[in-house]
Length: 126
Image (tube, rainbow, N blue to C red; front, top):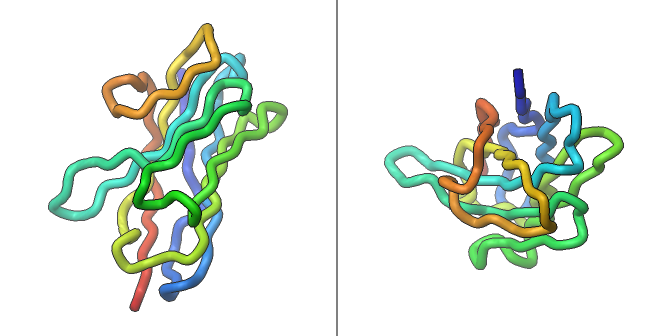
């Protein structure tokens, strides 16, 4: 059974930083493209960032580019989201997602992903 477990969320003041982690129980983690999404109350789920299975390619949403960085450690079956210069509008539940991939592609839509974590809450106070 595939499990994605996010951690690292919490309450932080505007301008602060958090690092989210997503640990995956995937036997062949390096064959999975990974992504981070977020959903604020009353809003639709929003793409945040994606990383290819080898980690050689990344993409960040315009709203977080320059502040957030996605990365992965295939030896640890973990994907990270480093979040700096946090803003109140970054407040949301953050989810990691995985999909098996035979190439080294990036995926930007929720529908492209097969597995999802339960989410971790990030709250940024002003």
